[in-house]
Amino acid sequence: MTINASEHAGLLAVLANGVIPADDTDQGAAVANAGQVLADRIERGVHAKLYVLGIEAAADASQEQFGKPLMQLDQEQVYDVMMALKAYMPGFYKQLRSDVISLYLNAPGVWERIGFPGASAHTGGYPDFDQPQQRSK
Image (cartoon, rainbow, N blue to C red; front, side, top):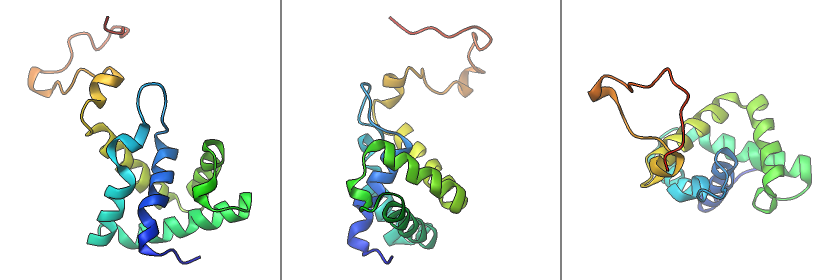
């Protein structure tokens, strides 16, 4: 299936939310506007061929597995499509996960929401690295 470039952002948003779904903490990958950011990268040529092939494979998997467009799948069905992509296009799956995670972890406020205290390289590491971690109060 050939996907129009104008559809990339929406389809990538669905796939990105398959990598980091929304929960009671935040909106998942949507908090980083991952779909649009990745679509913009395609337009600039960053991993363009891999992403276009991956989006097309995801659209095809959605039709084959569920008989409906990717945009109409629920979260569980998106997960199933992601697992099909992992098996069929592992390079795309790996790149998508890497890019989405990077975008998410660079979104403002995410470190605080997930309880990450920040980089420690400048202090020589965390002094309690060998202790069970506890939630801040």
